[in-house]
Length: 326
Image 1 (cartoon, rainbow, N blue to C red):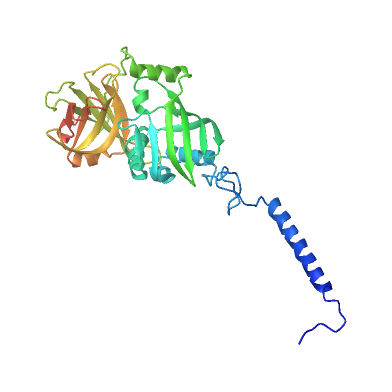
Image 2 (cartoon, rainbow, N blue to C red):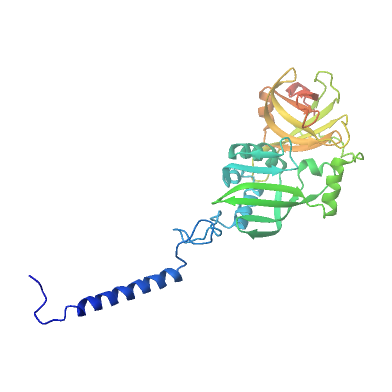
């Protein structure tokens, strides 16, 4: 049975109904416009379901500058694990000052680089200026007194840094020398010139536990010399080993990689510890290796011809206790 009573105008209620529907639709359209809604094709700048336009969709969910400062803090504290965790699983760390290689790809590789090479040099990194644009942070940093640099008399380097962030992780970090800084430019020129200043000579120590090795066990021993190893402890920190090398200089301007290998000079195994590359036949490195552990195992120090000729060993010495001095 109809609810309409006899005599009611049959068109009055439907008219009110349509008017209310029309007002509701207009209100909804106005609300959608105010919120940036509306249709559109991909790439037209229209909004998607997440409320961001195609052009504005962010790739970083954290402040890139803050993430970079977290990285410097971890490095300055010697916390390789914390530093590596800031990188994406497929992240890349490109550092012209360490080689080979110059680029370290993958979080696990970056962790090994930080533990066995970068942090062994007691790096201290300070931001000079950093700017953020989208998911990228760029600027300059000061990296102070890595052992392989201070061995040549340089105090610090000024470097250009570019960091790309994806989500909440670093996808890539690149360091390059700032050649507008006189000292950094001089360091860079040192690597490329034929006039390489000689670093300080091998230190001599009478402290207990100091060890002097002959680096003449390589086949042919093109650059024989010596290495000095001595144990020390950082204040409230772990025990470490200083390793100084003084051998016959190689080609001028060529960085010569140095490693502590497992095994012996006659049968070199895998790399156990990375060290600072030689310049002019000399270098110094602060290693996370513990001297007594090196003496208890089978290890050898090997100097390679260059980063492009790692198969050629120009100086080598087995780490053995019977050459202990003092």
